[in-house]
Image 1 (tube, rainbow, N blue to C red):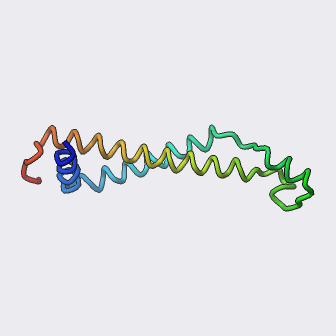
Image 2: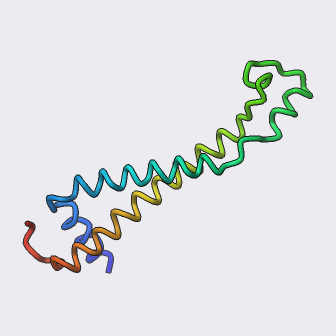
Image 3: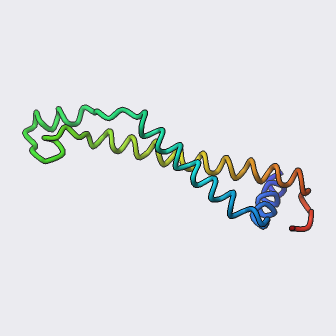
Length: 106
């Protein structure tokens, strides 16, 4: 099963359309990342804690939450990677169904 899957991925990577699918996956991943950042919460409790402790910085005075930035970064990276890999795997599976696992590369 795993050898068949690896063969499918290798055959899909060898097709002429592979760079275009990679570019599509990259753009789709970036769009998903941007949407996740847009819906992620922009506030956190770290600003209030820092103010209570007397920590003074430009980001604290502006009310900019570092924990919200970290959460948004993690969500964006995970969403972009999952989206890109999913597009690639779906495309690889469809190509092997169309061209066959052992088909000559176009």
